[in-house]
Length: 127
Image: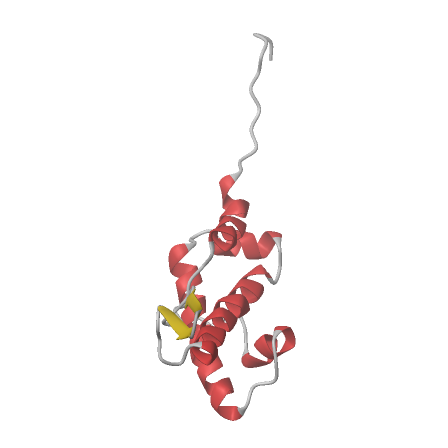
């Protein structure tokens, strides 16, 4: 099994200090996020070579999204509402189950290195 792109310490650098329980969960999620990156973006190695650290950054952002979703919505609700007298409030959660996912811009960042090719075309009949 390949090593995760990031560690709990890397996640702490961009987010917050994690207690022991959160560190254990973060390590598991970082490994899962790394697998997802490798599966969904076959050109990840080219992206990492072109921009060292991009996989670590994306991996940490994926895990942060999942952990924030769990903290803010522990019941896994997709939406909610509250009414008090004449006032009503409603909301929807963007990631109700705390799933690990790549955003379209992250996929584009990981695919950018492998998508371009350089070539030339001779426009004259000469050599």
